[in-house]
Image (cartoon, rainbow, N blue to C red; front, top):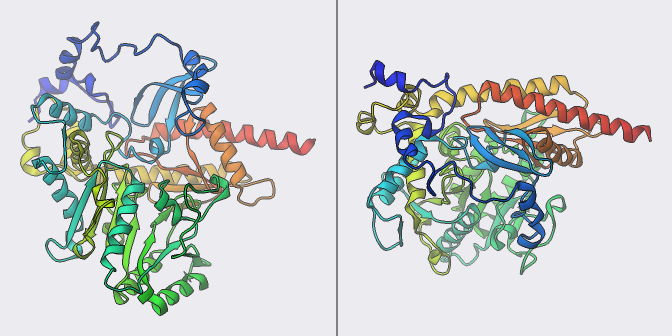
Length: 512
């Protein structure tokens, strides 16, 4: 497939990510755009970052749309090149949080962009309403459903693909569970868990407890009387389930006929990245089966590659009745969320069923390409790859990154976390989480986990050129599959500079 002449056109440096435009065959097309208004390298505005930021107060609210100190110019894999906007200082950011939980492949994945470019060059419509069919829509549905085929009879699962976000997917999942229980008037309770986060929509926020650390208060309504918040399931001394976890299972066993659903995150990211014990999930599955309760997994944070499989059920063996997920589906190349449900929980109705369940076809192209990258291409399509693709990319598309890159990146991450704790024992505490979804506890002056310190460190990291987030008393670390050993080394250096500054500040405050 690949001769010597093709290999000379592009020789990637090891397993390093590369921009699509660096391939010779693509470069010729890009060159034809240079100097025109279509030039990919052309500037979009004549204003400097400082001038743009000066307009924040008149353009944006103080919430999530407010532009920040770091200004991105280019990006590839886990690296973002840009400037510290207010000082115009050139810098490079190492992304250790998958650009806030959605870019499982890293930034500017060449295969996803190439698949989208191919679609844009076709004559197929870029957008279709729900009642107009497309083979792409059905192709994506079949590929996703096949991931859970071993957990039921043929056609036991159905899918709802939506041009929306994870909050909407959770909302739709709960609505489907509610409808399935309408023949049992007693089933009006929903079991949820403290420390969980299910989104920012009204319904999603209602099933979460208020967390003052992230801002209290809800819009329109304050609480839902039928939501029961159980303690976060934990083990006791690392051996068996805690007394609280066992009591939760007993309560659901005793009162199961009153519950229409149990909603749980396999990894509670906002709860200091707590991985729910697998033993609890297994026993919860048994209780829900015996009591005919719909078990819903909120996998917005962990699905599509972050625990080594597409869905958590594949690696854990515990399959829910409904899965809600989003974000990583397209690895940042479009908005898409899905709900996968056993057929008896498939019904939805207005107004929930009337939400946008169509959308731009580029998002469907993206999730199809992401599946190529994660699990490998169909053999008959792999055999027709163009000869000018880089050999490294071709190899990845043959077997999938979950087979090749995932074990490597997990190993690098484990070494990285061990080294941080060894170098900064007074500041870095135990780690939590699972796979590539991890938390690093930050310790206060008293040696106890501190959410305040975690927040301060996360903010200060931006100045030092490494992107992490706060999750409870932890730094939220969630690297993409493109993260290399050099990326971790660079991130370690920058985190060390951050930690030294935090410790120095703490010492000064104690001296006062």
